Image (cartoon, rainbow, N blue to C red; front, side, top):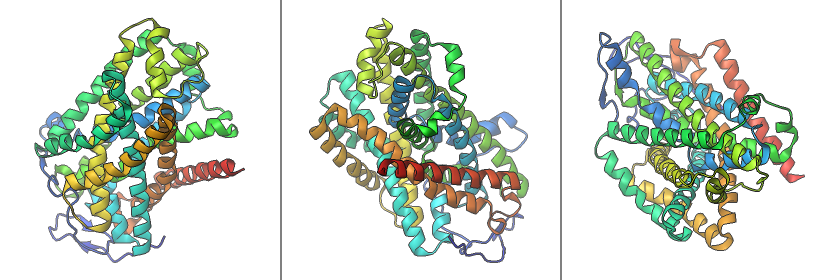
Length: 455
């Protein structure tokens, strides 16, 4: 990929920050209806200032505990006991690192990742990256649709086909919250995250896991790479955890904060944003690890290695644990997960479309188009293959996400490592090497999976 750079130009507002190496000095702000809409108190009020920056990280964390994560974590626990906890941990640290780069890009350049790609790359490359991002969003949407449909079926015995169709109406929830302000969206998301954490705290207590084996599960083994089936699930966990659309989303929503543009102000904004996303993603790590631990302690331990689907997990939890409340709590957490992911998926879709194409359509229409592209294949799979097909589609959607990840990670690392674009906020040598190393690792693992599958 070839970047087009120019000599740095002075920021028109002359705050000491320069517009570095971009083709255009200014662009239409990302999510213009909420851009710089949240006031940040001055530095005399440390805690109020920290709270003002808190929020975007939790919207990002939602993507790391969506129904796709549930499917991969349940399959991992029932098939391989605690062994793939190491993948969950590694994927979470990769996520923390990449989301920090995403926040840096948005705060320093005032561009989201989609806008940056359009501004820096030749049009054919930009279009290719846009299509890749859209495929990733559709794959993520499929997981949200199926997760919500399964939760409605488990809680209210609603037929799966009807549950899939009803997910089209969640656009109304998204629009209602967007019209009330960005802070309300963040508060709603945090509430649902806390709900999931509390529920899985109870589930872990009920399942009584082997804590020594759990701790050993966080240590990687060579079997993860040498066993093709294990690698497939591991890449599913990676795709479900480090989601490409989250990199686009984070680089945009960090721009909702109205802070100064001096070098010291930007450093301060980066510090608080890194803290926000790191804390939120550690909460996501707890939820993901909890799902896998509960699956291993409940299903693997009792010989139910065939439990690779959410519906099976729901049916077996109470009989195996001997606690009647375990299954309804599980379904409520799943519904919370699906609704949370719906909110962030809507925003990510809007950011990707407008950033790459500068084509703006009403949010409800963008959401409806995206949701229809997910609903059609989901209805087909449910009608044709039934419950079993849903589980396979959920896992496959996460592997697709993993395959798309390189197309977001490589531009992100490239832009934040370019001094002409980032100035003194450019990645340091260690950060740059870690970034390129992760890019190569992700691309290599996906290539290995494809080659193995074709044998």
